[in-house]
Structures are given as structure tokens and as C-alpha cells.
Image (cartoon, rainbow, N blue to C red):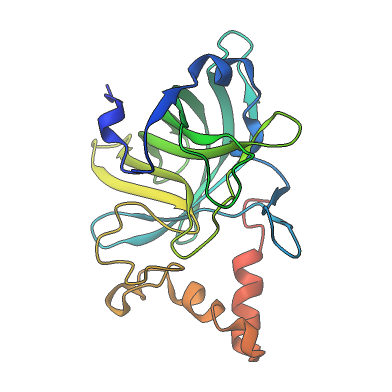
Length: 247
């Protein structure tokens, strides 16, 4: 059982108030699955919903995960039913599972740049089961931290109020456990950055992979970061990063 309490929160942005009842009344699907997200204050505010960046194991092998659908559980206002696929190297597994909101907090101090918005975070329990009939499958259990703000329509929205250096969201700290033999590995992922990534990531801004781990599935990602140069290899790498491998 995963114990979740406010002492776990590392986002020291001031005092918080409970917002759990409001989260239960809301539909939170677009925090985890949507075609686009809206970057508040950006010149071109709409962008594609980010694909998570992740790793599995002590050697930081690249891990991919994509939610193909998220729906609110009609029997539990704090639980969401998810389906999707994971990928390690060329091994792809289908999964089903749940995201369960355990806490919802609102910051009491207003956002300095956008004081008109309420904002805060959710702490969720995540349980995903890969298809046991598929090779290399297992279970994923962990904690998901999601940052939100309340938009002009009074809805919970993906928090983009401060998309600065080190910006991240949907940070997931989990463990993958094999169905066969019970081997267990750390497996973390997030949007734009990866939580508890140790020395995998050496940058305070966008994710930058330590060269000693690049050969563990990160070659294409690192090459894609140079796509603005127009170099054919980098453009090809960016196209691969955007490829919908789950289809």
C-alpha cells in the first residue's frame, strides 16, 4: 500500500488548503489525456499534449507510456479508468488500470504572474496492469503528482502558468513488477522532465541525458533536440519522436 501525505510534497510554494471535495465534483480527464494543452500567456498558446518521458531500471533504459483513453469511473468520483500502451525498446504492451485521486490541494498564495487563477496539485495513486499474455509484461504501481489551475470556465486545467526552466507536470514515481518471477524495477516518467532521475538528467531546463546513458534508448531523443538547426538527421529524429508508435 502506498502511503500518501502532505509531507511527501516537495513543491514548496507556500501554504495550501484542502481542495479534495472540489476535485471529486470535477472531471479531470484533460489533466492526463487530451489532444492539446493551453500555455497561458504564450504567443501561440495551443500545443500538442506532451508525450511522457520515462526510464526503467537502474541503467535508466528509456521507457515509453501513452494513455489511449481516460474515463471517469461512474462508481467512484475520485477514480479514473485508463487504457494505453507501454514500450521498452521494441517491446510494446497493452495495459488497463486506474488513477485514483488521494489528495487535492490549492495554494493559498496567488501566482505572482497570474493572480487571477486558483492553482494547486493532486496526489494520485496509479495502478496499471499490462496484458499478461504479452511478453515482458508486468504491473506498475506508484504515485502521480499533477499540477492544475482553474481556467476561465471554472474547470481544472493542465497547469501551464509558469512554463519556465525545469517545467514539468504529471510526475510519476513507480515500480514495475514482472508477472514472471516477480522482478521489480524503478520506473519513473513525467511530462517534459522525469522525477527522481538521479544522474540521468544533467540539466535544470529541458531533459538532457547524461552521455553514459545515451545508448540505453536515448540516442534519438538527444538527436531530436537539434532539429531547429534544420539538419536532416535531427529532423528525422524529431519525426520519430512524434511518431504515434502506439497505433
